[in-house]
Image (tube, rainbow, N blue to C red; front, side, top):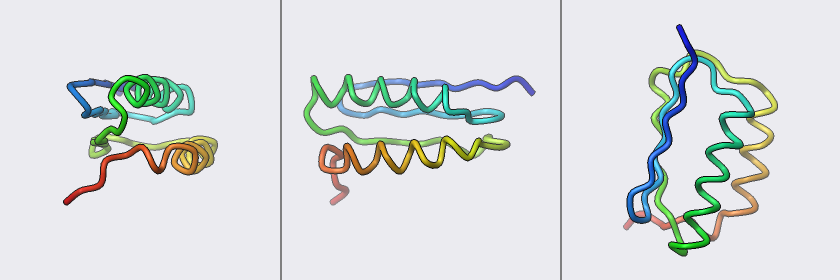
Amino acid sequence: MRDVITIKSEGNLVSFSVMGEFTLADYKEFEQEVEHEIQFQGGVNLFKGLRDMADYTLDLDWEEIKFTRRTAMTFARPR
């Protein structure tokens, strides 16, 4: 299976889906898109489609923790 990441931005919604292995490089691409949207939209909503993810790298976990702590207040909260 070929590894594929798809990222879409519509309004203040950033969605991404992963097929295959989710790598640090993929996550960095996702971070850039989210930070861009935060800059222009204020807060953002996120949708992660990980159903077809086969594996991920440990460095990705650490990067996600750092990113979440850095941007936690900019995500829209569900009501």
